[in-house]
Length: 121
Image (tube, rainbow, N blue to C red; front, side, top):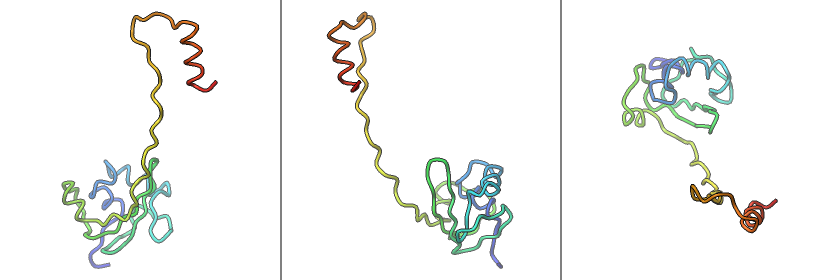
């Protein structure tokens, strides 16, 4: 590849990982894939390469638009890649846990029954 860069260096440059060491460890751990295959940190990527990065919280599908060797600003990093990642699912809101005002003392028997009923025990 004429215009290519290491995958760990590119992931660090476009701010997918905070450090290059984290990017290298992700590659070694099998969390970075190109064409469904796990890659080594020294694998070269060029324009048009699609990279799938599996993080603990979600999976990102990125396409290289511009191979970068050095870390750049966030707006420039956004221009250097095409993000094909679907938006995360909406968060399910949990009902609020009942709170007693500080200094209100222990709950009465009636209040304890209401709390138990609310919690579903």
